[in-house]
Image 1 (tube, rainbow, N blue to C red):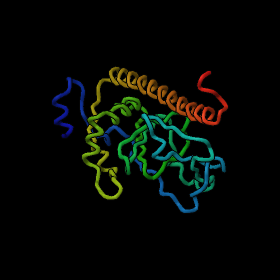
Image 2: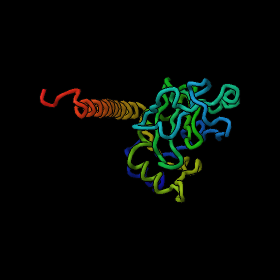
Image 3: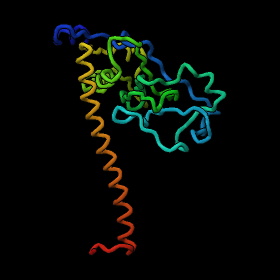
Image 4: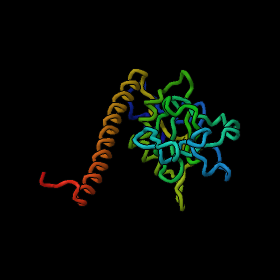
Length: 218
């Protein structure tokens, strides 16, 4: 389905335009060099967001000793790949189409070569929260999957991604949509944390019960 086809189904004043027309840049991450491997945030340098860190439209990173990093000397040459608050990351290989909004927590970090950074203009037609919601919607995900190249590792080219049709409601409507879905994402995250904590507690409790430290009859 093209932008024109989608546009015929929308309310008046809701244009549908290619993603590339909404972005200042669509940039893949820098290639990884052999000497960068094995270096972590705990060793110093600039941390790197990986595809696996994108979950629930957010970036979730682990302890510093598990987060890959680029040494300072090399990182200085990669300033054009630094993340800024309001950027959007999307996976372009493997599980294609997972996306996340960059917040201040990860500003200044670099990003993996299998990720694409979308950077919006300062006063553009679309807000970052709304665009993140739009990219994660079923319509966009189906569009991405239908255009993902097959092979051992599925992939999506930057050129193809730039053709993705994006519906652009009025600014007030965008803000309302983004806020509503962000609130739901927050609840999903809270429940996920509760599940993780409960699972960890179950493991500790099971060990204590099996070892006789605690009695199930108490």
